[in-house]
Length: 385
Image 1 (spheres, one colour):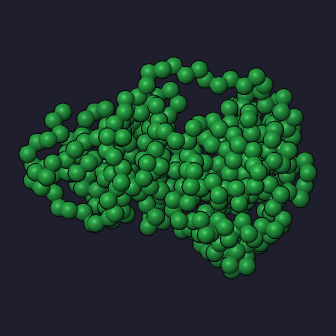
Image 2 (cartoon, helix red, strand yellow; image 1 turned 60 degrees about the vertical axis):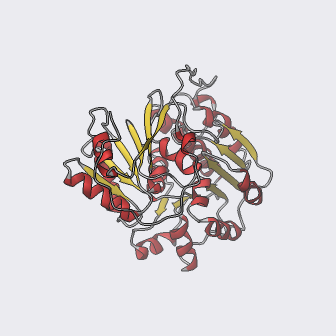
Image 3 (tube, helix red, strand yellow; image 1 turned 30 degrees about the vertical axis):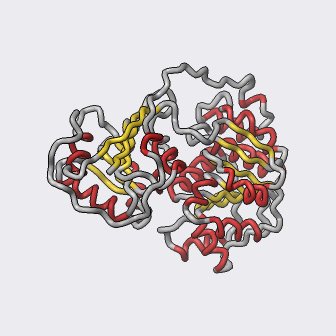
């Protein structure tokens, strides 16, 4: 396809800090190397888990632990602090939930707080907890933005075994004296680097300092920056390190390329020509601003391409419905801000497109990680003006 046809010039978008990424770093062919799947030498029945928990794991169809689970579960059941580096889709949610549930069921007087960067991830973690605790009396609560604060306050005052939430809403409930965290024994910080990227560092520090009864800290992240080491050590102490992915390079399963847009070209028309090809079946399209996301979606819909949006200004009900329509294939393109780059596990995403250059390599890695999952090969394009 010729991406450089002479077309009318598009209007300039709102000014944002220029990306410091070198576009040439965003060009990479997927590797055709065959990776031998990890196979654990033991199955879940050999982990000496609480019987009801073991039964629930079996009912979900899981027989053997994933690599991150195999390397973490024993240590976490022993209440060790841990820093784990693992990408979304590797089973890390189960890696920390299974030990927490086992401890609550076998020891009593154990409770957990799981802090995540996005509403969608919080809901997914709670859903996994519910499925793993069927037949028990364990209770969970999910506290996220976009929901009724009054109802959250009433729920927060009840006895809850596992609390899952986003930093903003959790701290709001703490400040309102509805949520008491001083006696919670286990803290999990999931997608830690993304929470830092989103500016939640002070919220996290505030929660950590208020957990006086904390006995175990678990931190998971898909990438790890050396500049975060001091903060991580302050939070986790001399924690065990478990690495399933390096956390520093982009996916080997994704063909990555850039599309240079000339001044004489209309950028949207270049995008339209691209996504009109038959191979673009399920597309995540990233823009840098909420306004830009809304504008792109309207342009796509007006052009006859079914699209929807997800960003922080949309209600939780809207975001949940948009994701479900995209998962089902009723929506071809989901236009999003970086909120969709974490915590949303959508199978079959064929393409990821960055309509502008991402601000950081970390952001880029997590965006393109939405495609090329499991044994599939994905494709990522980044527009460069």
